[in-house]
Length: 432
Image (cartoon, rainbow, N blue to C red; front, top):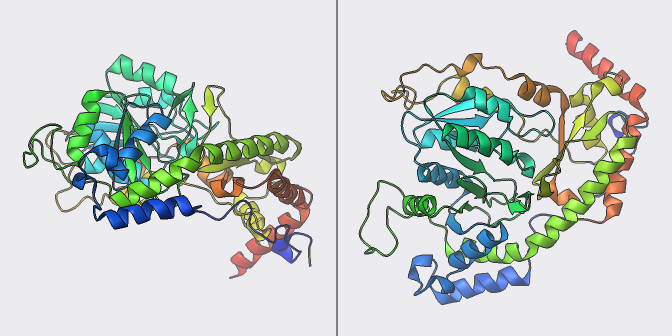
């Protein structure tokens, strides 16, 4: 029996860190009861938006993120679809997206009849690389969709300069960055617009749900029309102006969102305080380091916290072995959404239906081969480096961070044992 839990030793953590998610209470119950008893379960049944839970949620969340306009929708994926429509993305257009993200970033581009162009990430913090963005721009480029990956804001100064230079739109995927700020301004309020997700795991949840934020009236109005069956504000109810769909959020979701939003500022402060301490303490442990935080990130409302593993400082042990050992010690870690999106079967097998749209669209006229695509930083980070912890792990006391450090110290002090275990596993695999 060894010292580390992976080889039979006692795990460091007997109880999970932080708090169980989602967190809810009397406030959400009261708001939901009010919707139930009102008999008006969709926002359109209210005489004014002041009475609507969805209307209140739109205004309050937009204010929290420093945006003038908020459009609540059914989920985060359709928020991105509507946002792309709102900036005029159409058939034959290209939208530049990072390879390190959840698949919805790219699938939203496809649903807007456009072509996702994948680019590499900044190895310092796994957000989109502005230099790679500029190199990927072609006459077909209509927009770039930077992702605040894990909640870390992208370099919006560099991206805005590129967008202005080439006259393209910025549609930010803010699905992870509720509460984050770049130079004092909330994510989603920078560029043309941004789309958020309120799926149950997110730091602000309505179970499912999403929202588009913008400071541009024309973008907000077109996005709102697309999400509401083509209606225009102030026009007759049964008058429809553009081809679109129905993406509306229910009053139930709006009620939960209002309850959750009341908790967000305090929860964000707790997470940020804990992760700052943890990141500082990692300097004393070989093999682990936090991702880079740009000083222009004035608030970090992260969805999950990434840290880096360096095998060269850890007896050459593979990252997957270390990840397995961390979980055996009771520390929940995984690789996040670092699996390059273009490695999914939809792109590798070009699964775009019998007519191959949008790639066969006559407005495009170019061939795309995702099968040969290889972005070195994205591939390396996923295979060798990335580790992350969920946001709820950071909602507890500082002592939880000390317990996390205990786990990391334990592995660092037992590298020989981990290396021996890894060699044994490799030998057994060859024999099998």
